[in-house]
Length: 291
Image (cartoon, rainbow, N blue to C red; front, side, top):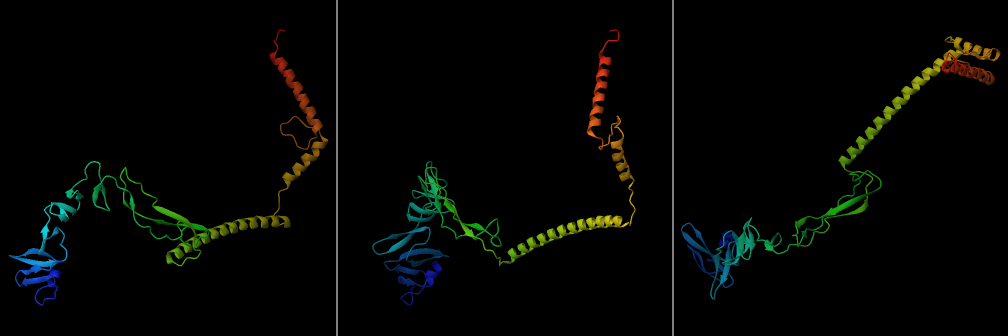
């Protein structure tokens, strides 16, 4: 900044802008009424520059015929209003009543937007972002139905216990999802899904074909047997038929495996006889031998 001000040429061909008198060794000697005289050391000499405002770490003082820039005499001060009142401190120090402190006093809280210690600090939020793309189940396209889109904002200042709480940070609204995908990633994802479905269908068709082949083999075997390609053993069927026919003619015997073809009357009589026999056996068992 100082080098730029020193190189600017004013209305005088020899002196820079804002200088009313100057020397080649010390620069500006006097300035115009609206400019401040800023002095800095360059090697072993002192050089003056006329500036419209004082740089950081200095404050302006106006006199009757001239104005000067004086250094701030406060530790860790970046910009000051007067010799003993600091308006902005260096990081991480805080400005409180013109002084630079490491922490705010008890009962006071630091405000980011003002860089000062205050009694109460309200919540401060930034501007809203733009609406996001409409999505449904993580997809922005290629799905039917309605989705949601949101917009958010950041918290710039957290509130103090006695300050105002923060409002809503996010908003959402319903929207329609695009059916077709134009992006390469979405197209690749859809192609993967299609390939998976095709593989599943192929597996199902293979299983069906295998089942049909087995069923066709069995059907062909039965057809051959019917045509006489293979002889059957009909001995079991003949015995069943003989047993069913003979059961009607002969009485049912006391066997555990009785034929199903026996008539119900003979079964009832047989059960009745068995019941009488059991009663007699019980009487013989539970009666005393001498009585």
